[in-house]
Length: 125
View 1 (cartoon, rainbow, N blue to C red):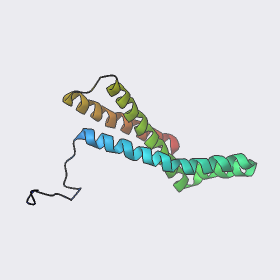
View 2 (view 1 turned 135 degrees about the vertical axis):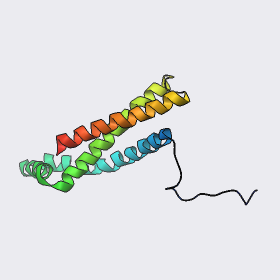
View 3 (view 1 turned 90 degrees about the vertical axis):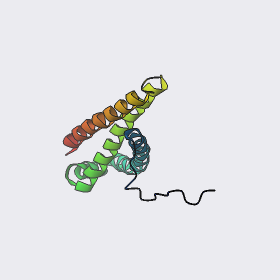
View 4 (view 1 turned 60 degrees about the horizontal axis):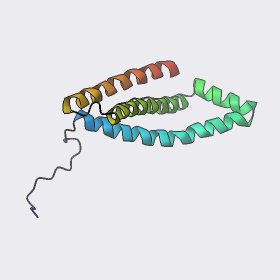
């Protein structure tokens, strides 16, 4: 075993290709969606308990910054995860498997998701 091999543990200096970034973000948005479901289930349960609960949820979503931020975060994660999932479906069909086309698909994934996230932000805020 070569003990003189270079070891770089500083994650900020590692240069990842765009395809790796898209893949990592796809996994991160899956985790965000999983955690965000807890908030969505709570709001859904509260809204179905009574008219007052429904009004509380509606009021929170219209006036509370934190509630809007959480909803925007979950919707943004859903948008990104959806776009990346569609890209993966195309890859399963045999498209975008070459180096250059895969890189272009990853860039397109980031651009499309960014546009959808901005539109979701405009819609929510």
